[in-house]
Length: 189
Image 1 (cartoon, rainbow, N blue to C red):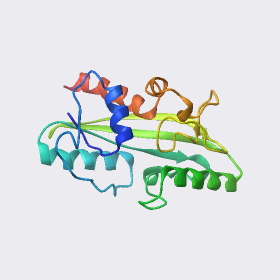
Image 2: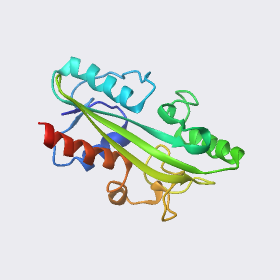
Image 3: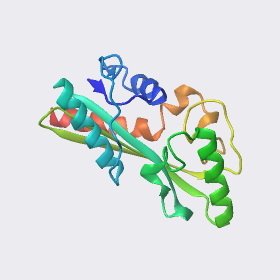
């Protein structure tokens, strides 16, 4: 299967989670494309990526879209998590801004990380969804992970970035989506 992403963090994480399957990243498959994420749902973006890559390779594709939905910000940044400050912003820039925005609301710090993982083989479309609930921290913490992992605190008071890779890969939104997708794949294929 082709994994429709150029995000090194996602590639590493998904390959580790789906280690029993042969998965090639876009670069490993010799594909140099970045599908524009212009849909208004995680599912829409993941499906668009899966279909566009499938049209190039004509073999099964897995694509994901994920992001952070913060309750007091009406689920912002959602599908715009990676882009809400522009394409050149770093994860640190985005994380600082989100903490600032939540602090200004002075209310609930509840948040959830959402992942939709779509399998597409030219005929079947199967989607797995994972949701990891937590709260937004007052400061970034942790050295592991990527994206917003440093600001999403779990019920045990550790951020996702304070987990080991093995711990994260057993509870992350991407893991939960992969488990959901694999169960559906076994039922469907």
